[in-house]
Image 1 (cartoon, one colour):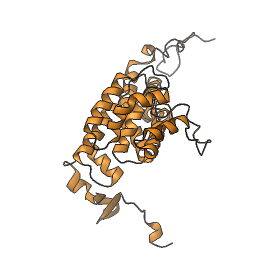
Image 2 (cartoon, helix red, strand yellow):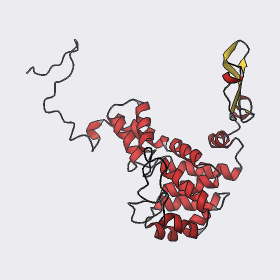
Image 3 (tube, helix red, strand yellow):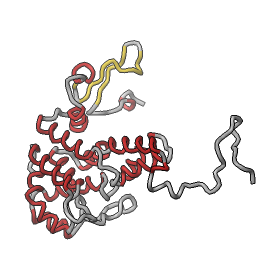
Image 4 (cartoon, one colour):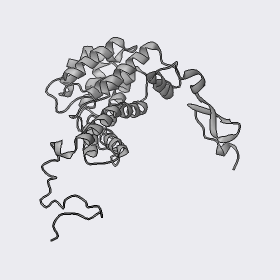
Length: 278
């Protein structure tokens, strides 16, 4: 095996080892920037995320758009399926890692999840701002190539199949993000929302706004899918921690089904139960 075969290839990251320890880094470079020598204290978390994804610094407008999107999707609240999954895990006594894993698993899908965002971004790449192209795609949705991985979507990606009208937070987010976006897709979406909703027979969802924003940021569908998963974790984390604190008896979905008909009682000092023996 040559030395070349033992090298990890990365355009994103490079390290220089410590002189006395080849397993520890003395300097870390992200896309050529010294992370701890130059970036630390001079770059925001959002700007660093963009640098990691794109391997180039964000412009002020790009950073503002990404920061706005991060706030908009950071916590979707208990109505959201992925948040609820984290809450269920938390109140059930799962580890903190398991709570986040539950949120990721549920939030990865095609109903309000990251996969839906990726599919909507693919639609933006194909249709751009051509209403005729959107009309054709919405009336003739593409089929999944790997049905064993993802089934065909049951609704137009980026739209809410259960919505009666476009939710207020979705409209507020679209307005703000369109005003600060360096791209054209969000502004076109704001102008064309009514026609797109008519064509899809569904109101616009937050996933649709996110897809347009991530496309304006010039991210690929794969990058957008990963980033959407990451940006939604804060809400899952805090709701899981809150429900762990409250306990299952204050959790409306568990309290009636978890009442014990024959409670064995608390543990004694020897580790035995004080309840009656059958």
